[in-house]
Amino acid sequence: MIPAEFLRTPRLLFRPFNEADLDALAAIVGDPRVSRFVGDGQMLDRSAAALWISRSRENVERHGYGTGAVVEQATGRLVGWAGWARTEGEPEELVYGFAYEAWGQGYATEIAAALVRFAIAPLGLSELRAITYEDNLASRRVLERLGFEPLSTDGDEIIHRLLLPSGRADAV
Image (cartoon, rainbow, N blue to C red; front, side, top):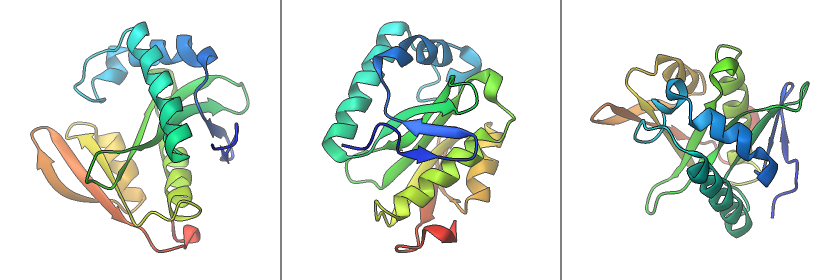
């Protein structure tokens, strides 16, 4: 299993979810301004947030990585989630989302860049994908900055792909 605190950026900590994250995560995924860009665009209730935490922890135990909490180091406040989702037969999907109050601070770029470097080394992944809604221009710009290229569209969603340089985490 991954260490309790395994990825730090200058301002953020990415770590596995724990039960104490439930209130903050439920508030984030229950905010329609955030949820409109996640999954089917529907808000999640507290029980769905609890299930998310449980499944995320199971995935981390099973695979050694997955989705987890993004915490501001200066305040200790959970400001979002990030990580990798797995779909059978597809490359790992880079995912992230932040509390509305945390938007516009560069957190998505900061954590996504760190996760891409982590995907290269030590994980050794060769490709990542990410999905954005067409009208989520901020996330589309984050992915473009990191070198993701639009691959295809599926309704309102754009599927992006990033081919990773083998073992060169400094390339991102």
